[in-house]
Length: 152
Picture 1 (cartoon, rainbow, N blue to C red):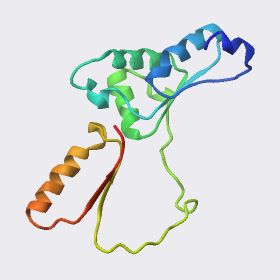
Picture 2: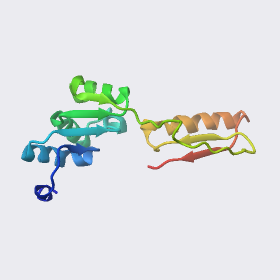
Picture 3: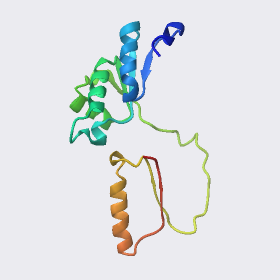
Picture 4: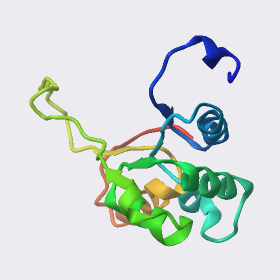
């Protein structure tokens, strides 16, 4: 990757996840170009709150060397400051969002009520809370069909 960049003109180094942070840091050191990290989730949320992992260390070291960091929420920005030691002034929050006016509405008639969970099936997204509450509701015979959509 680094040898290929000698033939490509670019202005900014962008890293999207922990997997790309080390390469981004190396590129910054070799080229002097500014490095922006975009953080959607952190290892802290995936379990490093209980025990530190090599991924947490890669994130902490890489984010310390970023010139700017884009966080997808105020929550994530807070984790970056509190647990990763990132300076708040380096962080800009840009929420994952869509304009409701851009996405067309599709009207469908559902034969009955439906409970929908959409999200990555990780502790961070809380599917265990969803399913625990669903089990309680079904036991009380208040249940309705559920649909779960997500990935690991």
